[in-house]
Image 1: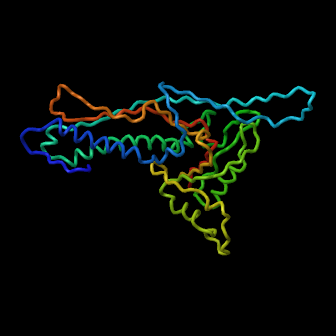
Image 2: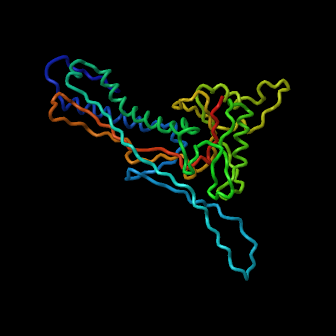
Image 3: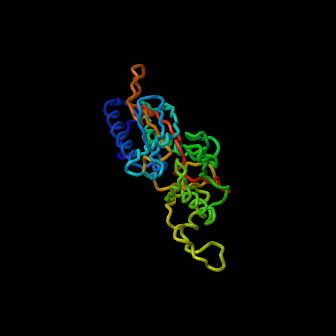
Length: 313
């Protein structure tokens, strides 16, 4: 807490004074906490809804290539492919704390400070864990609108006549070779109509355990373990490294392509962003102040076209 507050060991406790002091302190803590960027948010597109269930479908902007057509012929009309859809089911989360008369009299300043700072941090932690859950389950539990895992080799094109496409590779440790496989995957990606639609890798998201390997690839201008001192191509030093502190694996790594927010396949849907209401309890006159946290949201992947995932080795 910013200020030191004398808390008497006995005698009268001015509830209104302490309520005002701790309330102001808590409000300042919430403001500062809200200013902290969420690690996983940069990879998610955000939606808001008033409903418990939110459904979204894709409509492709890709049309067939123009056809040979003379002035006297009927103009061929082209129709975009309707994409897959996904439903988000929001869950509500609540928790809280209270400061009591006994805590003030006992001068439990540190305990009260931890409660004040801990509540907004717990909301931040829940949000980060939700973001990370998408990557933790990308290979085995989290599915996109097409029914395949978010990182898989069997994604169907929206126009099923064009077969399947892949956004994952053979499990491998992060190296120049495995990163090139990710780069090549993006360069040869096909859109909903099956036309080549290359993407540019921008970010490598990885677990802390492989930080050294990622930095060696990104920071060196020579191929590791190459006696001829062969020079690395420029592409290996261009990606932005981001450590996924909330991911549970010790080997997973992902590459994210440069796309606009509207084109991101991972989405967080907010029904209620974190709010903090005052607690009141007429049956407990010993409570000086308290706060209730409420948040309601869900995360899911509509698609994984802007991702390449590798479960590592």
